[in-house]
Amino acid sequence: MTPDTIARRETVDALRTVRELWGELLLAIETPPADVWPPRQLAHTLRAGDDEPLLVEGRAPLVLREHPAPLNLEALDAGLAIERQLFALADTLAAGVQHATGEDPRRWNYQDPGAPNARAAAGSRAHGLHFAAVWIEGRVLDEDTEPELDEQGELVAAPFTTLPEHLLHEARNGARVCEGRLLRALRLDQRTTPLPDRPCPWCAGELTLHTGPDRAPAVTCSTGPACTAPVEVDQYGRRVWEWGDLLDLVAALAAGEQLDETGPAAA
Image (cartoon, rainbow, N blue to C red; front, side, top):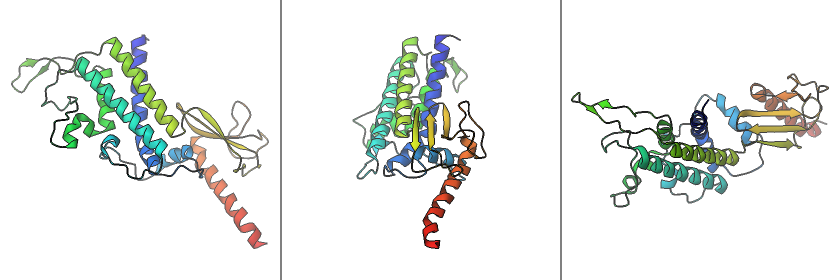
């Protein structure tokens, strides 16, 4: 596999991570940062099975909105930085490879401060982060770079040229920076988080939450194989709740918490 092929794959993967988790970041902006159960790392995973998917494509870009009272400034700052970086990256790639005319919906339109209103002045930024990420992915994959037939059947130049190597690697670096910023804002980057106030419901051992950019969150128990939890043992001998088991763990923890609260009263 060539270095350029690896760079393209890494760029596309990073852009898709940003698109897939963007709705989670919007929710984080509207949620006060607090130590709640389940943690946002697990809430993100468990929400994947909801009947109502979170739709974010129609929401205005963060850079065009007013934010009178955001509940999570860290998440808002991360979202604004990610949008600005991807929009600037799209500007850079367009300057290097774009030949599409103003009537072509595939064209990336620059900002125009002289436009009559804020949305028109924003150019393609008005379409939001999803549009920018998909547009950048198209340039990285060299889509629409072959001559085409126009409405009269005449062969015309392609709307884009192939992406030169230096712009490919600029796109890779920019996309990966955005991915890392988003994962850190959602606490989905590589980390281990002890849950000292949530002992294992089966053995009272210490639970630890494990997250990373390339895996779903998982929880392990410190007791080891002696723990009677009905889950597999990992390579280190710990009971581990992988993605498919987390609902059962959360339910067991909630049931244990209810018993703690009602126990003294019953006595």
